[in-house]
Length: 188
Image 1 (cartoon, rainbow, N blue to C red):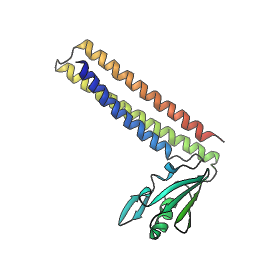
Image 2: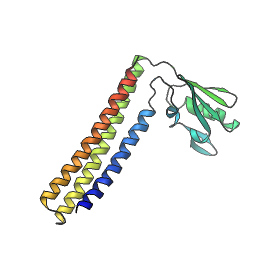
Image 3: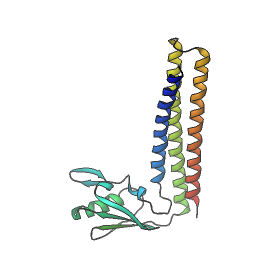
Image 4: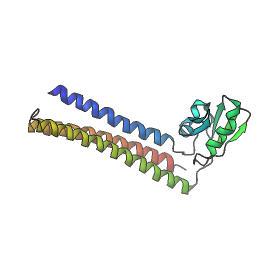
């Protein structure tokens, strides 16, 4: 039976890790006034008859703290890359220089910092909800095993406690990540 608990915990850990990884990606996309290649990762470019991630049409670089560059591989896509960045809702204004698209990162206003902090809070709450959903699934599986008399009440209670400890650990990691991102956003 202990092996069953281990496999349950391993499965729940893997799923909770997925929620944490999604949160990290969401946080990376929040602009904090410093250039980061992750800022452009969600941008999709009209190319080759469809929309593709910007990383499939060029190389993203950060030559200086307040500048991102995209070295576009196909000269015919430079305009599409520029348009995609401008229309991405990130508040960026790219400029093409041959096959290189320069994206200056403007200084954040206090109002924009507050918006970013709210967005970070929403992302963190979505991650908490996802982790709690995984916990609920795990607890449901434990109850089903108990109902089928595959485990006893005591063992069910112990397993449920283990799942709660795992959940608490992930919620703490989410809260710590949010606190760090909030500090980063609010730095002047």
